[in-house]
Length: 357
Image (cartoon, rainbow, N blue to C red; front, side, top):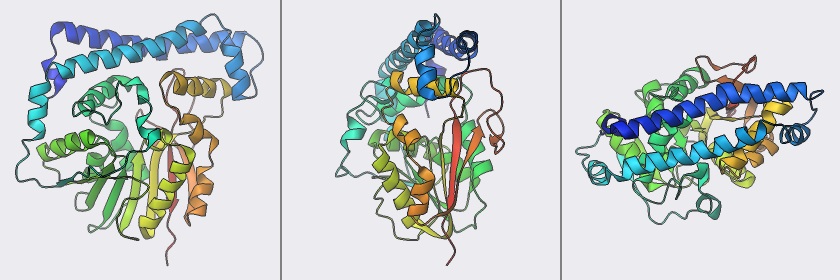
């Protein structure tokens, strides 16, 4: 498979490096400086709303806010230009899969809900579903968004290693919102003898996921469909999972997705989602809420305002819990996120189980 970064020109590489450096300094230099200015401004706020009001009046806030959105726009412009200039080669390789190990099943009849199509999520022009190249753009851009720390899908590997249970060989694992396969291939590595199924709305993402899985010799089934109504049989799955997908749904869709996961699970099966949760620090959490606004993530607030543990219980699942997740090297970290100076996503693992009969 073509890796676009291996084909970047000198000017393209310089632009990518500049955006990456700006994003890193925004997180590890500007954010701590803003936090210090906030602490010097008076007693800590008691609520996220109060903290947000306070920091929006700080001197550094305009730079913090402006640079976050500007570098995101620069990222997608650079990624989009790099992908489009190589369009023919990239499109060709999607059709080059021969004697596949896995399966790709696209369904043009799948109805894409308005909440999925009406926003350019992450400010990516046209979103993830609109063009065959949109998946390449997102895959390339996501490396920079994660500060190159998720290369090789390290976060997803940590999630599968520290949050998911051991399974028998003849297991079935379903990945809801699998995108371009960044979570599905680590699942196949974690469970090499299991049937792994990835489901997503976006045909471009599924085509790329399938092509890359085949290039790696990994047998995965990719289905275009709705994670709320997968069409898979009742009680047919050992694990239902997803990474960074629930925060991109309105609250009702999140609830329906959890209900569908509960329907799919066998007795004793496990629900596991990697998501975000508030840290409990009003200042840090206020900057996370602001990130949702600046990054075109309209349902971040729905996730934080919803009781997903109650959703799990209502769906008949037990032992529902959230655990902080350290994406750097530890994975699930029940004792908390720790004292981190830099801005970071508040990763957390949602876990629940289907009761045994």
